[in-house]
Image 1 (cartoon, rainbow, N blue to C red):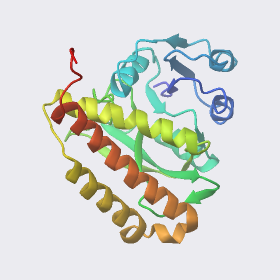
Image 2: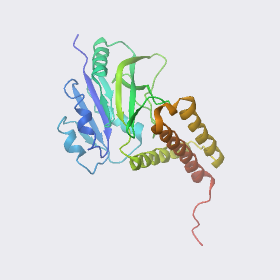
Image 3: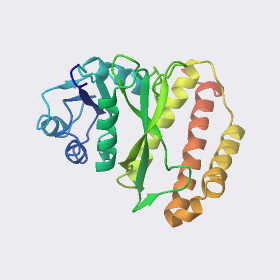
Image 4: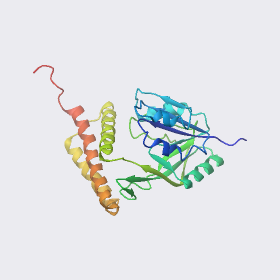
Length: 261
């Protein structure tokens, strides 16, 4: 039997700052790199083509889940390893991925610990570590679901989930503006998705969920051990939680702009 092949797949937009460093951690040991762009205006394409000719564009953004599904349709290898441009594969993780692919266990998918660098510090508490994410699986076995945001790999009862060794390093936010823009996008997508399902919200729900988020991250998950960054991240996460519930409330519970006034 021939050795199973492996592809790295990414969905990207305006990732010139991170993409080269990300792909440098994988290009020399994977068989294929697939990059699906959603309409970059920087030199993301130029950087990607230094590592692969499998660069595609789908500027009609369908949501994170459907975009990942489309990217996977371009993968020809036996296994797919998903990365974001702001992530880096460590040597230990690389060795673990290669061992898993070589072993080629049936109906098995793999998750990795992710260690995030946020505002000048690795966050090891706040519920952010080990932050295991499913990222490696046989290409024909499964795919991401249809969620517009916070998409997940579809896992059936017949599948076994195994842990990979090593960390996936995640350079989460470039600065505060990056955090706010990224957070606003997630909140909008979350509210839109809930609205489609007929869900509603209230300001009081937003306050309660935000308060619960802060208590969980900063106290229960020991975010205080991450210093000022732990406090800031907990506070910002509480704010983001409130915003998504407030967005849903505005969409579903408030009057629309009057046509006549």
